Length: 134
Image (tube, rainbow, N blue to C red):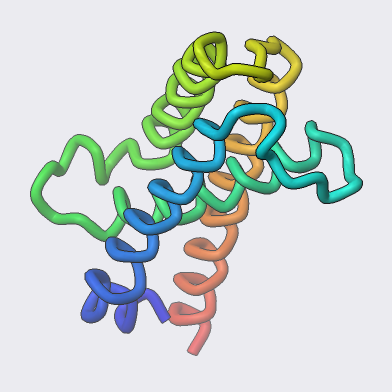
């Protein structure tokens, strides 16, 4: 699976990350009255959105070959990047009518980033373990 993603990273990793991140940024830039109500806690919405972002970004960092330092420390650096982005996004919402900056939203974002990194870690570890076992 990882080899397949490596060969097709533009189509299955880079482009989906870019599209998803644009959608996420657009959604967090909507005025409060225009935000659709999914009838779930906004913390669950934050957690879900940032977990998906983290999964895409972690694979992107792992599969890129230009910056060895990033690749070598992909899991921790991805968590840091997404946690910082979540904080910046919360601050950005101070300027959006009907939105607010909430530390608990950022906590959900950062927690989701940690969980997303763990998901990718166990996928990668599982795939590599399966290859060694064969």
